[in-house]
Image (cartoon, rainbow, N blue to C red; front, top):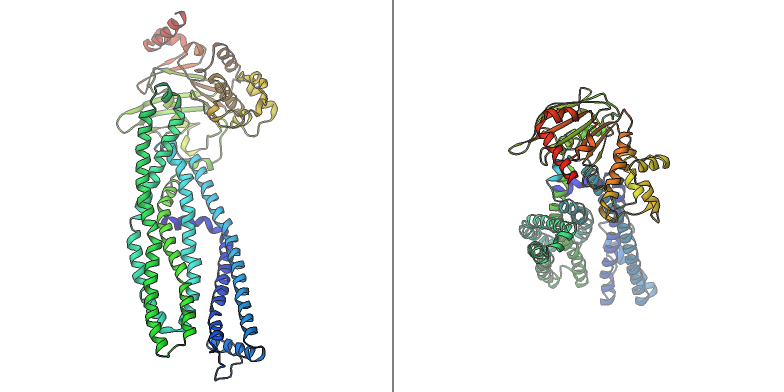
Length: 600
């Protein structure tokens, strides 16, 4: 329950809605009690036992409530007769019922925006949190797990919040007001019934202990299934090409069967709440009937009052059972709340709150290392990058080229040393506007071409958009499409070729006007003609733009100012193309392999 209560901090802006909900619930219960209480005088009219009080009752008060009502009804009976009086009392019952349901709808009316606003705010907070979390933390999770936390877990939390409101507001109001009326009618019988409430609560708590743990396992397993489905869709071409339908289906069926088993255990425990509560309530009712029946037989209470007492008591049972269900919902939702809070309480990159820098003179890597659980991925890097330089990073696959860029982009916190921009540690400044990234695996949204380009600069005008697209050699292609820049590209750009997606990614980088352009295998998916245009555009970049390129195509970096040769996480050689051909055996070998492929 603590986890659910933590999330209720999101309810602060909407406290007034809960206040209104509570007021309307209160009046709904009052008019419900009013309607049901009139059953007693109705029975008195039918049994012919309505008699005036022996004392004169002029003013209505809590202590003389029954006598006052009976006197008023007796007066009506004497003046208008029993039929008119019965009709009038029945009219009051109907009016009370109408008012009860009107206030009940009002309570629900104010509850709806309350619950939806909270879930919207939690989802918004989670999404913004995900965008600002450090990459290593996000990588610990499967995509499906994160999706499940923002969807299914939030649904569980929504019902858990409803459970909290019923547990602490709605049902207690109902039970307390009806209980007061029962105490007013007969103190002894009511106290006998109250003795069994702690016993009932103890039994229910005992049963619900394992519900939270099983619910958490169920949510985790559902996340696994969502991840598996997402991976299956992404890798559908592989599954089809290898005819691995049976193998993949068996794995899915294993996950699915385990989820079914967990859900059975969760629902068995949850569904036990209502019958268990009803059984215990019935036992209490039987005990009350026995004690109350003896009281009636001993003439300590009249029959119609006791029948009315039983009717009122029976109206306590539904909210009592609802309390039990609410308690189970809270326990079940508490597991989901923990999974949500696990995301919300993670530390994020606080540099976004600092003043952003948009220019620099020098980027310096000073003895920078990045260590995994066992080995160094990046080892003792020392590097200085001057503004306007063109830097290339080359080496065999797995040598640490892309990881070096990711350190600069703060995707990974380095283990040792520091990276500085103009002698300021990158973790002490907001350098998000400093660089633009183009990756080998093009990352696009299922949106229009225009919006995918505008990710680089949402405030760009039409002229800037067209210029960026022309630089990336994609403008002419976009013009041939029926909807032009408003064409939806599909999930991951499925409606485009690899080269078209890569050029849109380049246009996005160009439009950002970032002073550092980082290209990780930017032309890997381009045809020869597109490569030629892109390299031409890169050569025409403003002299103040710093270009950092990771590539296997050494012919494209011959004119770069500095080429870094990496091996096993370290920079083993550095210099321009001519220097490295003479002095770096590794670089010479890489260049000769590329040249041989071209000649072949």
